[in-house]
Length: 451
Image (cartoon, rainbow, N blue to C red):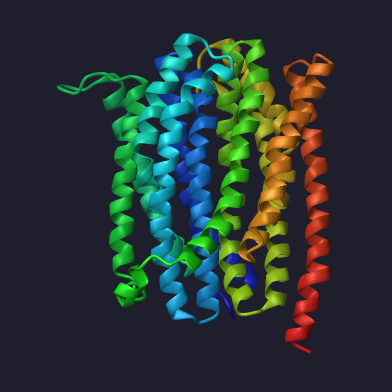
């Protein structure tokens, strides 16, 4: 594929579909974990659901490393600057190792306090810590995988990561029941077994990605000079990665706020909502795949100053994503009860999960605007704009919803209807900001480059 010359619709499909399939299996991976947690007990399901805001710090860091690596390496490839490309690749690995040490410390030190802030019972807190302590102990594996893979994504290779995610999914299916319930000489580990299965699967993923990267023609040209730490590259990676990492970490705050409010209806309401969010993650997979595609396409074209292709990529991606989300919303609304019963046989858990999904179906078409607009700004090295948008959506919006709901003593259903309205308002506002930026900045830049 030539990201600078091939037809945009074809490129979006070619890049998005492998990324979409890979992310599907990554999410199915989490669904398998949720499924088996439900088989242990409703309390274990609640614990795994509440661990998500804590675990999400690793996800946010991984996204930050991926975006920084993909956009900076992609821009360097677009500029045809081999030295810069290799320096960014080696430094993204160094950077990934450093940040993984920091988040491991934070996760092991403060997870218990976060569970307590969400109003968890002692049993749910202990079960949650069994899982999060193992995940954070192996966080360096998660970060190294995405750091290495950022070179492949920058080159337009989304198939390799797809393949290893599919493999890790099947490994997880095999390992989860063995480690949770025991098998022959392997003792039953319960929730702890879910975490160990995840680390083993991620380690296999790391080995495969490493082998693939070492065979890359660009990597074979790395010299000692590229391995010497340089402040300039660390600085650029930090300012491209950290804003998006910090802002996405805001999602942890959002999730914690929502779990706190939902928890007022009991741990079974939390379990039902947690199961519902897993389905929502599956539905959002096409958007994440398309977002991966546009970051790769736009970053290279921005480096090559092909501004018209950037605009075309954004609008084609938005059109595809909106159609997919409207269709998905209809499916989710009509099958909410059946979907939730997959995770639990408890009638109360099923009821809360169904109620959440039926409301969530109405906000799904608003999400592509947020994700793809963030992808657009990150690809053109404007992470600070994505950071601001994430701050508003992931911190200010939930706080606003929480206090409105608390002020009117909103029920479970009303709380999420307020969430729908606020998210639609924010998404439309963000779309207008992108329109303004395209008109006032990129179109003017294009006129200068191509008079």
